[in-house]
Length: 405
Image (cartoon, rainbow, N blue to C red; front, side):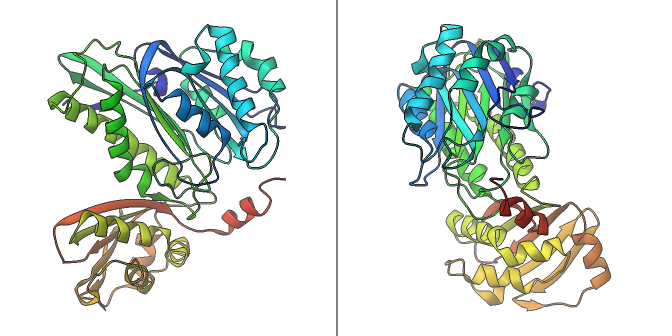
């Protein structure tokens, strides 16, 4: 496939521009809060969203706009989720209308998203006043758009790759935000992906819907699913490859490139969880089914006790087995093998469901790294899965204890 990483984020694919400004939604004038991504031409589009029954108004509007499988722009604000507001739909529609006003792109071809505090009124005025400046900022400015969608994120989350389809150079780029309220089911917080691949809306939706099951759906920061989770992709076809309209070799190459991007962003989101000091990766193998492997991995990564132990670099492996045991899957406790691993080494702590002797000093070194793997073998079958999370720290409580203020 010849896939390799490149720079540029959502602007790496041909025909995409992005920008971000501070328009006044956030009180802190040093933080950008208004983002725009635009394709030169109308693009195939696909999306996956929160399954939380309490949904942000932008989710409802975006679903409507993508019902025909096409879009050309993405507009997003941070600082306010536009959720549980009586005029939320009106505001989300108005945001799309602002894009039409300055660009000529139909409001129906605009994806809209919001992130921030839930249950506070979102005023359209700052965005109306800032839309001209935002549109003027469009260019090779993926980083500005990325900054503008961040809330308590401490680092930007961006990726771009290049690969070959049908003899043509193709690209996928992406930006993301995701800090707290991350335990997704069909997406996570805000993910915006762009591509210059020619692909039908149907195949693009199939690709994204399948991919998130092994990428964004396998993240947990705190066990809470956001009301505004949205993951969308635009593919404008400007790479010039033969359009993908079926499950073919080019489609599978596209899937691999997409998955590379989504996994990279998933790890970035998990590692930058609110207050986090380390990325935790849970690898499960030897499961009877894919469902068993995914459920066990996700249950372990969601466990507050496991997360707290990782924060303290404590090899309290019994907490991992405890989580496996209440996952709801019919595992055999007497077949479980468990290791902790980081760049400092590999530490076997459990074999056949029983503890093995290990060096506490080595355990501390291994678990003190900023990326730690929990490797589980259920020894029941041939299926496997990976989930990503972070440790649970004092700062998580500090951040969420006064999030509104």
